[in-house]
Image 1 (cartoon, one colour):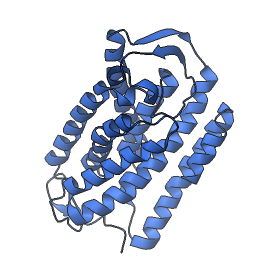
Image 2 (cartoon, helix red, strand yellow; image 1 turned 135 degrees about the vertical axis):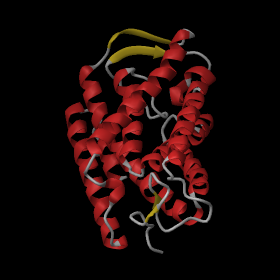
Image 3 (cartoon, rainbow, N blue to C red; image 1 turned 180 degrees about the vertical axis):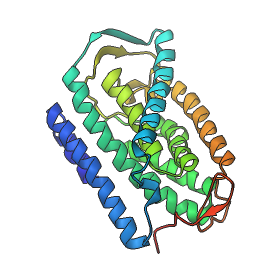
Length: 271
């Protein structure tokens, strides 16, 4: 979280933001791996290097397409308009800022909180409190709104948790999270979670009722976000069930493999 605040502090300098964002990402992952190895004495399979790049790329594409569906529908109603090219350097800086935010939040909410609760109470019990906390977390943003936090708690929270369950690694939710945030800010230049986001690649304007355009909170408070987020959540949960990755109520000492067997490679932080 300290790294994310540092990136935010220099966001007026896009190249420094990009560099500091990259450093924050690398250090956050290294610290997470070190803490898990040290406290749980196991291989950190959920943040393993093998396959990380390809999984993140797939996640980013999913996140971009997801936001594209939301903003496309808002545009069809006439509430999103592109006026020209915005700031290329702004888009560069936003890549660093959103990368740092995505990685640190996913490590905290899915890497620690979700994993610990799921181990003890099962997948469904883990989805509820972590989603609510994830929504509440966004109330700390400058232009936050209760409605925006509710939409995040009902869509992004379950969706990112389900992405982790479906793949049993953190790279997919990190990719989806970054893809969504960067598409919203770096490409389409809309507000992101009431963060007073800088202009990205396109010069644009979002208007209309809060339930459609999202108001000062941004399109994340749109009903379209809720609908498409829930649909993607269902898709990830279907995939998780097919792979045998859903942990039953009461938890278990590992995770299910694709054949439904239990793999003890993922355990919780000791209490």
